[in-house]
Length: 79
Image (cartoon, rainbow, N blue to C red; front, side, top):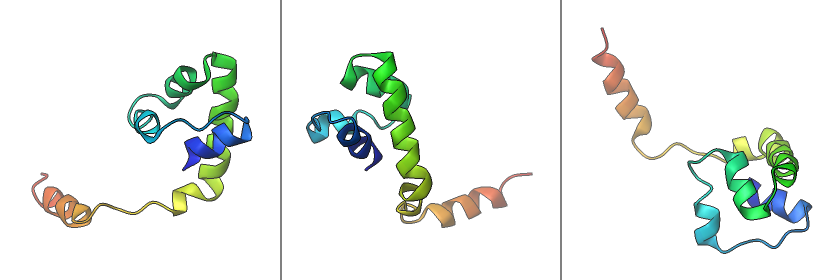
C-alpha cells in the first residue's frame, strides 16, 4: 500500500488499519495532513506515494468481479 510506503519513508509510525482506510476517498493530500499534521509533510508524502504507485502500485490493482461485464451492459444502453 502506497500510504504505508510513504509514511515509512518519512519514518512516521504506521497508523491502525481503520485510520488507513479513511484515506480511501478523500483527497490524498488532505488524508496525509490529517496523519502527518502539516501541509509540507503531506506534500512530501504525496510525492512518495506517487513514486511507488507509478512504478509498482498501479500494476497491483485488479478490477472488482463483474465490473467489466457491468460496464459493457451500460455501454449497450448509451445512445
